[in-house]
Amino acid sequence: MRLAYSMGLSYTAVQRMFVATFIVAAATWYTQDNYTEGALVLIALSALIGIAWGLSEREMTFEHLGLNQAGVLTTLAFIGSIALFAEVGVRIWGFPTTGSYVLSVFFIGSFWWTGALIQPKNN
Image (cartoon, rainbow, N blue to C red; front, side, top):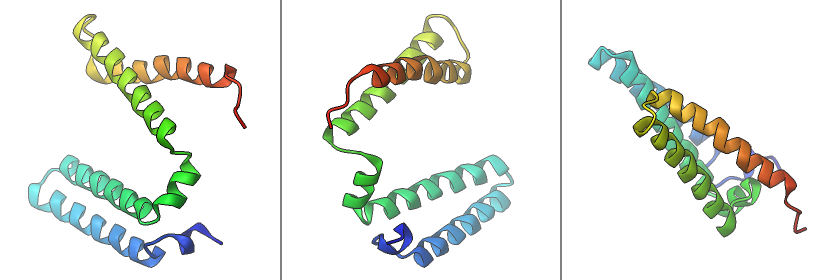
């Protein structure tokens, strides 16, 4: 069965929500006269729609993404270690914030990826 037909929210409803999101973002850009705010509204509302669509059929979404209790904790630890390393770079070494987070993603990500590759699978 195709994923679009097996989710809790229909694909047509999700498409309509994305069109509404685009309209709201365009209206925000027009009324605020700031394209950055319009883009941020578009990103935020699109992320909320994606989360709502995924949670409408939580079991299938978590199965496809491999999110279980250990997976969620691992993901939170990964994100926390990236933020911690980036903040150390910003506050101690005086790196620019964006550059520090990009460096942190690649640096910490390489350690996590290497660790995942060398650990045996429990299948």
